[in-house]
Image (cartoon, helix red, strand yellow):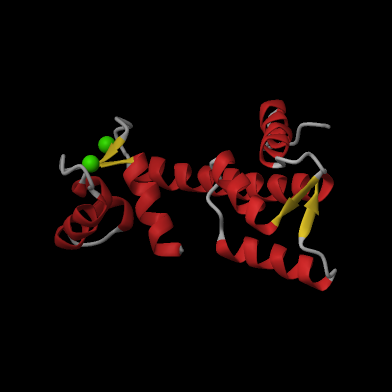
Length: 149
Ligand SMILES: [Ca+2]
Ligand SMILES: [Ca+2]
């Protein structure tokens, strides 16, 4: 298996181990139910759309299981999509965090998005889960994902 732009050899190995772990009876197949568990184990955010497409594909073929090959390509797609999104969010966050201290303050947000300070403050309150008055990358990413999903 070759690495790709976004996936490391480690990711690929993890896909393999996860499949083996979840496929309890070792018949080389994962049921839909097991697929969900596998995603959880991999720690991937299961995009509902992704999952629905996969389930539909399975239904069309009239089968209720995934082979390793199918699971592998599904996971790669998921992980890649996730990596692309992370990269995008990191860029957006970096453009807000003007002084590069890893936090976006309401002043920085106002400036970056060109919005009034009050609006920036509202945004900040929305995102600031630990209440320290600034937004970390993690808080920003969570806010973004909650809005999208
Ligand atoms: Ca900052
Ligand atoms: Ca915070």
